[in-house]
Image (cartoon, rainbow, N blue to C red; front, side):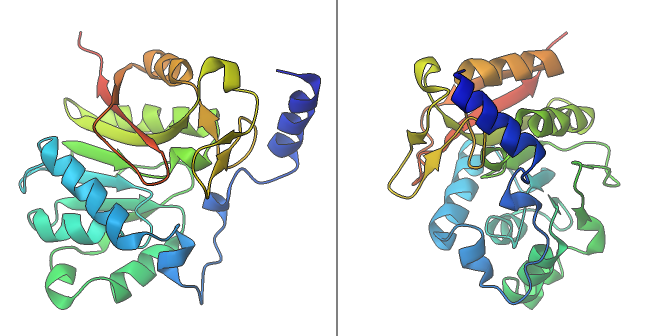
Amino acid sequence: MSIKNLFKSLFYSYFKRDSHYYLHNSNNINHREYIGDKWDEIGKLQFDFLKKKGLKPHHKLIDIGCGSLRGGVHFINYLNSKNYFGTDINYDLIKIGLSKELNVKLRNKIDENNFLVSSDFNFNFNVDYFDYAIALSVFTHLRKSNIITCLKNLKKKINNGFFFGTFFLVDEERKDTPFIQSKQITTYSYKDPFHYTYNEIKEISKNVGFECKLIYDFVHPRNQKMIAFQKKRS
């Protein structure tokens, strides 16, 4: 890393918040715009993806960074009652999603025990395990230390299930320079939105006790890449 980028990294680490992901005040907002627009497209994208990867109605799913239920509305409709679990740092977004995105039928399939508000990836729902977990557009806003915390905590609850998370990826030689992912998105090594190399993700995964692989048939409109995690076999 160059001296210039080192100073930038230190500045953003110690003097600026990691990400808008940690902002709480989201009252009086357009919740669909707030989480990045493309509401219908990306909501259906993640739902279709997990179905393709084997998600069935009887499975228990945790939606990490569930926000205002862009994906949640599809998962709640599809899964058996009480099998969808959502967690987010932002209570306002969850509240807006519950009130504005779910009809009466869908609200009756969940209750308050299906949601947790947490800033440290607390997954202590009253269930023994999750069959599937997904974090869409979450790690793209987080530093490596936060990603490690998430994976460590999830490892206790995922058992033999699958976890899928999206990242912005770059080649090794572009790691320390801004990278244009799409017309709307430029990513950085030192500030939100963050990018990582695939080798960095593999190293994190290995150290936490997961195996991971890049999913090539997932196409995100903003060039996020899907990575699958599964606990290492003994």
